[in-house]
Amino acid sequence: MTDAEEPALCYIVCDEAWYRDSDPTEPDPTITVEYGYASGGCVWEFTVVEVPNIGVQVRIFDDAFAAFGHFPDLFERLALLRPGSLVEVRDILDDLGVSDVTARVSPYAEDRP
Image 1 (cartoon, one colour):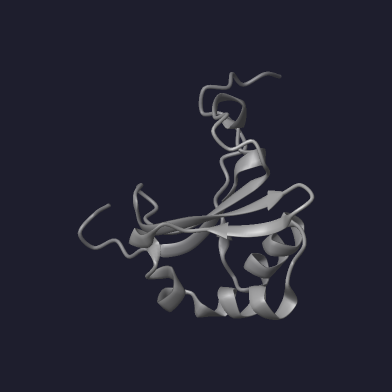
Image 2 (spheres, rainbow, N blue to C red):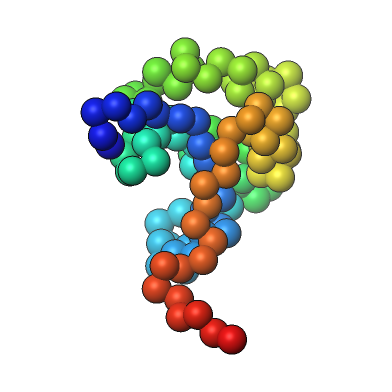
């Protein structure tokens, strides 16, 4: 984060990230939503998880409760639309103009012809 940098809403589709196989801590499909800085770090973050045979869950720690005030449109849409999958959650995020910042290509990948 730089002094002049403003945070922005963004999300990461964890199962599509290049590093997914190296992070076995969340076995269920997950999207991380954050109010973060392009240079790294965030004000808050929470996860939306698709749990098999249960549904979609929002997982948020107390240090990120500010998300309810910063991003009420998302929580209103989740309550209204009751998405049953992460695809539907992603559609809501896209419709709200939230940026997908998922790193799908490894910065260590070799360029191949």
